[in-house]
Length: 315
Image (cartoon, rainbow, N blue to C red):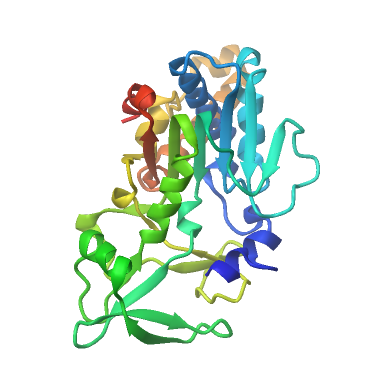
């Protein structure tokens, strides 16, 4: 999975993610505006520091970074240092205010935002055999053919016992230890601030019996063959992420001012262009917050102590 996604010629080092799937960032500029509002709240909680850092983990082609910078008040934007963390080459035409980097800056104050990053952090898959022994699933990089390998042990087994303890024969689990470690490292780059991870997720009481690992290519779900030709993604065990509080996206976005309320019909008569614009925004907001659409994403909030109140206001 590591090689297929991030190795030489890997999917994310070669492909433009928006060509294969749409995230909340691509659906509406309302999303970037909401993240900009969150950054402003972080700024206030930190006392308006001279250097306010916005770190966009797994930045794709920098769409969120650019949208947030455009949505910020000028007084805040003038102090923001924006970092797009991505392994692909810097895209042409990206806002010059954005620093393109392979690693997040360390020891900074601000907001770290990871939109659909953890679901692509490589992990191992385990399956219980007919005797109930939990074994690693080994997979061919050529055609995706699978077989059961060695029994799971060590830190991986300890993670399963704590976070995915019920695996029936033939059932599968995705070992989220690597995601927990990646999240701890990313959130740990903040000297003070708020770290947010946004992903499809599940919790201990409702782990999927056969896991969630799948592939995507050109907008279609495909078998997860680790040959570099497709995205490989698995939902995140959000409740295992260290220091994080899971919150539904629809709840967080509404707290940041994203509303799907329709504009008054009278506006169609007095200001038809404004009515059409407001109606389009309401439709986009409904998609971002719908419990049957993108509203089912989870925001995992990890604040440093001075930002606890900002995180709490989103729950």
